Amino acid sequence: MLTARRRVVAMAVILSGSLLLSSCGGSDSGSSDGKTLKLWHYEGPDSAMGAAWDAAIKEFEKTHPGVTVKFESKGFEQIQKTAQMVLNSGDAPDLMEYNKGNATAGLLSKQGLLTDLSAEVTERGWDKKLNAGVRTTSQYDANGVMGSGKWYGIPNYAEYTMVFYNKDLFKEHGIAEPTTLGELTAAMDKFVADGITPLANAGAEYPAQQYLYQLALSKADRSWVDSYELYKGRTDFQDAAWTYGAETFADWVEKGYISEKSTGLKAEDAGVSFIQGKSPILFSGSWWYGRFASDAKFDWGTFLWPDSNLTLGSGGNLWVVPEGARNKELAYDFIDITMSEKIQNLLGNKGGVPVAADPAAITDPRAKALIANFNTLADRDGLAFYPDWPVPGFYDVLVSGTQKLLTGSEKPDAYLSALQEAYDKGAPAK
Image (cartoon, rainbow, N blue to C red):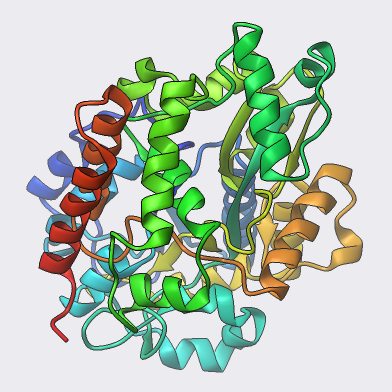
């Protein structure tokens, strides 16, 4: 997804048309002279990944004398919407961050726009550093379905969702840290009674759909996830899990746990609401961790969604090498540096979830807890990916649908029927 993805830390101030403008002009990539690595990613400079990739650029230039990294910061939504056009032009970068999943990296691999990295993966040992749950999103078959086939991307961090909570606000209102869903709902009831909307939310982007998907996951198992995400069975949006997710989400809006006014808000708004101490709870991803550590001026903590073996998560966004890249060897070398213990350790201490760090080198207490919770999820096979991944265009369907649930203009049954129609239209024929 989200995914999810890095919608939170994407550079929203970047001119929305910059990708289009660059693709319309003449190529500045030059010939494959081995002197320039053209790199795109959309991690915010204050995020753990942004700090790690900046350090990787310095390390790359130090180990590649005479080579310059031409880095361009792009917005998540920019790349999401224009990647196909740019990669079909003469202006493709040598290396870029791209969202994982069938509807994104899988689609581009199927269209022949991404380089098959399988030989490099084996030669450089990247596969040995990625566990099964993380590598799922790296490989795609001929139909662009993740989980098997050739390697088209490399994640060098992982991510998962959790409950962020404002310890100071909980203490002020006499509420203990919840350990069960019943205790969580009781805490939200207390906040509502005290005139506070407990959950930070954003209906115009991924947060709302992730709340709903997590509710469904609490009633699901691995086979349910595999059917939905990997097409290993039939997905019925009227089943018990999806019905519980949609009905409970609508009920939480009615009870005041989630504000109807959040319909037009974006992920950044939800995060800022938590940072400013206005919302005591935010359910979202590890990509927020570094920013909260630096910006939140109160005591806060996290816990995994209670009473659920599954939660949203996966390997992080992928490094992909466009098929039209001019300097592929340089791209492979840069990926290798981001997978090095030095960069992985830095990533971990900055609040990211590294895939190849030395555990003893992670010294920050919160970072240790973040990684420990991820290991708990990985050990129980608890990463359930993201709801918008299965079919192209599903993200927009989910956004529109959850907005209607927020306003009450659509009931859960109609919402689920709309999801079924869009999913069946985009899923591969059985």
